[in-house]
Image 1 (cartoon, one colour):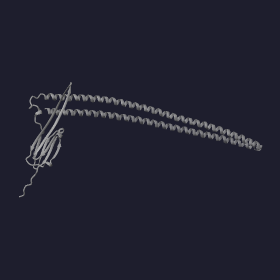
Image 2 (cartoon, rainbow, N blue to C red; image 1 turned 180 degrees about the vertical axis):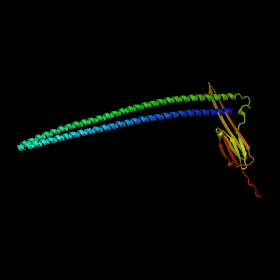
Image 3 (cartoon, rainbow, N blue to C red; image 1 turned 90 degrees about the vertical axis):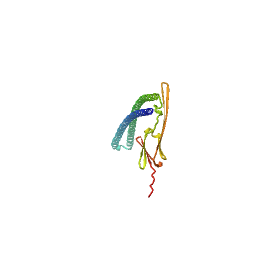
Image 4 (tube, rainbow, N blue to C red; image 1 turned 135 degrees about the horizontal axis):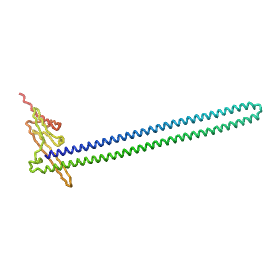
Length: 323
């Protein structure tokens, strides 16, 4: 009964650990899913911000090119107007020159000087107007660039604030989920510990009910079920060994016998209501099976499958005398 209680306790402990591990795995999967979702949202938000910056940049370049084209057209028109005025003045000068050609060199020189002064004044005025137009164009260009930079900074500020809010929201959800998961795991662990403690306590109570050694399984003979099959050329030994006891059982062949031996130890401790109870069990067994014929102990083969250890032992066959 104590062996059965120990096996029940081991199985209960193993099942509880598996349930705790499964619950932790589920919480990890949920957390990884939440992290993946938040990463996707952040990537989407960054992509929207990048597209907005690209759009604003393209609009700024388009506006700048349009402004540049308008400026070039204005300068071209102004140059044409100046050239037209110059040609008109030159034409008028030629007409007057033809009229006064007969008046003499003195008047001709005076007229040339006057015409040169008029052309110089026109040229100076035209250059001043061009400088003013160029300065206005430069001012407009700088203003356009400043407006574009200011809009880009505003977009970056809005995007950074959205990213920060998203990060804070994710952090808050992560902390909340982590605390909830820790509470669930703590509750499960507490319930599991109580169940184990109760199982141990019941086991200790049952062990106190035996009044004689013959009733207590601790003093009974323990071993493992074995079956020996004798074939013509070899022996086959089948030994029932639970998987968790596989490393504690030894099967060896020595001379004319098979030795099946094993040992195991169990120690447990229970603390409840300020009291501590502990138990230590140690069991060992040895079974010897005599063989009718000699065997080849160095040629044995072993195979473990589904709780059965199969040992194949070849016999030492003797040649029959010729006659």
